Length: 167
Image (cartoon, rainbow, N blue to C red):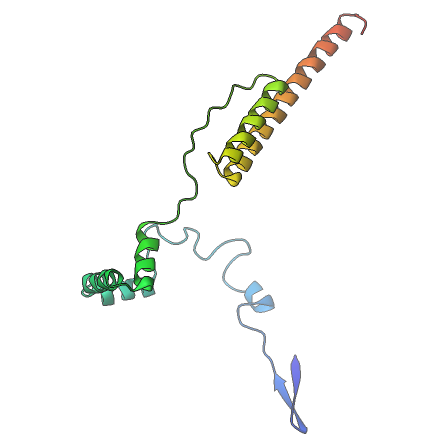
């Protein structure tokens, strides 16, 4: 396999070799196809060598660095303050919300619950994204309720037909 490369007015021919760990060379290698050279994988608790080296370098000065960053944050350095807050107080993904939702037993109840959610969003009791998540949960429950009711009706029809009854 050769490649032609144009440089200026002339051309340069290069010979590209296939890597030793690919294709035909690997197929005839010491490992069987489908068998890993390390079937047990990386041992549990094994740490990256670069991480261990970085920790060894910082071990003596880590306290000093942390105190300096804290001091800078207290002196008004917003980058230092941001770094501290991001590390120690990560943003919350979800929050617990308190909203009284009526029990759902029928499709009329589903409509009532959706109305309660919309009203809670409108009053600012919950955020629109929280309302959307609640509405999706109610929708999922409504689909399960619909499936259950459909299955119950189908079962009754099948029993009626099985016993020779008319619809």
